[in-house]
Length: 103
Image 1 (cartoon, rainbow, N blue to C red):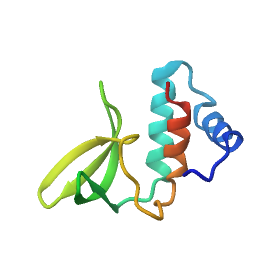
Image 2 (cartoon, rainbow, N blue to C red; image 1 turned 45 degrees about the vertical axis):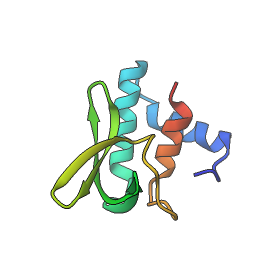
Image 3 (cartoon, rainbow, N blue to C red; image 1 turned 135 degrees about the vertical axis):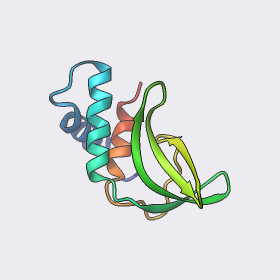
Protein backbone atom coordinates (compact mmCIF):
# COMPACT_ATOMS: atom_id res chain seq x y z
CA UNK A 1 0.00 0.00 0.00
CA UNK A 2 2.89 2.30 -0.76
CA UNK A 3 0.60 4.37 -2.98
CA UNK A 4 -1.20 6.10 -0.08
CA UNK A 5 0.06 9.47 1.07
CA UNK A 6 0.49 10.43 4.72
CA UNK A 7 -2.58 12.66 4.40
CA UNK A 8 -4.67 9.74 3.07
CA UNK A 9 -3.36 7.45 5.82
CA UNK A 10 -4.08 10.09 8.47
CA UNK A 11 -7.66 10.32 7.17
CA UNK A 12 -8.10 6.53 7.39
CA UNK A 13 -6.67 6.48 10.91
CA UNK A 14 -9.04 9.26 11.97
CA UNK A 15 -11.97 7.40 10.45
CA UNK A 16 -11.05 4.19 12.27
CA UNK A 17 -10.48 5.69 15.73
CA UNK A 18 -12.97 8.57 15.75
CA UNK A 19 -14.95 7.19 18.73
CA UNK A 20 -12.12 5.28 20.41
CA UNK A 21 -10.21 6.53 23.43
CA UNK A 22 -6.85 5.12 24.46
CA UNK A 23 -4.69 2.59 22.65
CA UNK A 24 -6.77 -0.47 23.58
CA UNK A 25 -10.00 0.99 22.22
CA UNK A 26 -8.20 2.25 19.13
CA UNK A 27 -6.71 -1.19 18.45
CA UNK A 28 -10.17 -2.72 18.88
CA UNK A 29 -11.54 -0.13 16.45
CA UNK A 30 -8.89 -1.08 13.87
CA UNK A 31 -9.75 -4.75 14.37
CA UNK A 32 -13.40 -3.99 13.59
CA UNK A 33 -12.61 -1.88 10.52
CA UNK A 34 -10.11 -4.37 9.10
CA UNK A 35 -12.50 -7.25 9.83
CA UNK A 36 -15.25 -5.50 7.90
CA UNK A 37 -13.14 -4.28 4.97
CA UNK A 38 -10.50 -6.95 4.29
CA UNK A 39 -11.60 -9.35 1.56
CA UNK A 40 -10.92 -12.86 2.83
CA UNK A 41 -10.04 -15.50 1.98
CA UNK A 42 -6.91 -14.67 0.01
CA UNK A 43 -3.65 -16.48 -0.64
CA UNK A 44 -0.21 -15.26 0.32
CA UNK A 45 3.20 -16.70 1.18
CA UNK A 46 4.50 -16.99 4.74
CA UNK A 47 8.02 -18.36 5.30
CA UNK A 48 8.09 -19.74 1.77
CA UNK A 49 4.79 -21.63 2.14
CA UNK A 50 1.58 -20.69 0.39
CA UNK A 51 -1.21 -20.13 2.92
CA UNK A 52 -4.79 -18.95 2.83
CA UNK A 53 -5.74 -16.07 5.08
CA UNK A 54 -9.18 -17.07 6.32
CA UNK A 55 -9.86 -14.17 8.68
CA UNK A 56 -8.49 -11.92 11.35
CA UNK A 57 -8.62 -11.99 15.13
CA UNK A 58 -7.65 -9.84 18.08
CA UNK A 59 -5.49 -11.81 20.50
CA UNK A 60 -4.39 -10.59 23.94
CA UNK A 61 -0.67 -9.91 23.87
CA UNK A 62 -0.48 -10.33 20.10
CA UNK A 63 -2.78 -7.64 18.78
CA UNK A 64 -4.48 -8.04 15.43
CA UNK A 65 -3.51 -11.26 13.69
CA UNK A 66 -4.28 -12.91 10.38
CA UNK A 67 -5.52 -16.47 10.69
CA UNK A 68 -3.51 -18.43 8.13
CA UNK A 69 -4.38 -21.95 7.00
CA UNK A 70 -2.51 -24.59 5.07
CA UNK A 71 -4.27 -27.92 4.93
CA UNK A 72 -5.42 -28.78 8.45
CA UNK A 73 -2.85 -26.47 10.07
CA UNK A 74 -3.71 -23.00 11.37
CA UNK A 75 -1.34 -20.24 12.49
CA UNK A 76 -1.90 -16.69 13.68
CA UNK A 77 0.47 -14.17 12.08
CA UNK A 78 0.67 -10.57 13.20
CA UNK A 79 -1.25 -8.52 10.64
CA UNK A 80 1.64 -6.06 10.35
CA UNK A 81 4.05 -8.94 9.68
CA UNK A 82 1.84 -10.55 7.04
CA UNK A 83 3.28 -10.33 3.52
CA UNK A 84 0.44 -9.23 1.25
CA UNK A 85 0.08 -10.64 -2.26
CA UNK A 86 0.34 -8.52 -5.39
CA UNK A 87 -2.17 -7.12 -5.97
CA UNK A 88 -3.26 -6.82 -2.34
CA UNK A 89 -6.80 -7.84 -1.40
CA UNK A 90 -9.55 -5.26 -1.16
CA UNK A 91 -9.43 -3.51 2.20
CA UNK A 92 -5.64 -3.77 2.56
CA UNK A 93 -5.47 0.01 2.86
CA UNK A 94 -6.69 -0.43 6.44
CA UNK A 95 -3.62 -2.53 7.23
CA UNK A 96 -1.49 0.33 5.85
CA UNK A 97 -3.44 2.74 8.08
CA UNK A 98 -2.83 0.50 11.10
CA UNK A 99 0.91 0.43 10.28
CA UNK A 100 0.86 4.23 10.00
CA UNK A 101 -0.90 4.52 13.39
CA UNK A 102 1.10 1.85 15.26
CA UNK A 103 3.65 3.14 17.78
